[in-house]
Image (cartoon, rainbow, N blue to C red):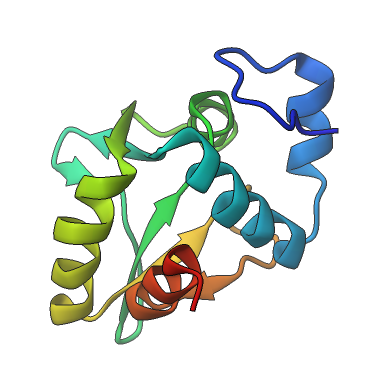
Length: 131
């Protein structure tokens, strides 16, 4: 399954396994792996970061690893590149900004027709700080 240590490159088998995880397990993978890797991955398109918008909600997809973000880009045919942000910067700058703007986080989405878990920025900040 997913590497216990930080890996620059994931094998195809690991990527396929990770893509088949249920929403709760994908959320747990994001929280645990980004804490180890000290970075989080997002997808930046031509107009800024890729967001899901529906009804009143705006959501930012986040990923634990570049290869998983890239797989999301590939299977959803998104024009964009995977970018990482250090966990410190994400926790200190991004999470307060997302909270202020009411943007939620989609934890390692796979495809739009699969159930994805959504967290508020405050909830993720709390998880990362161990509270």
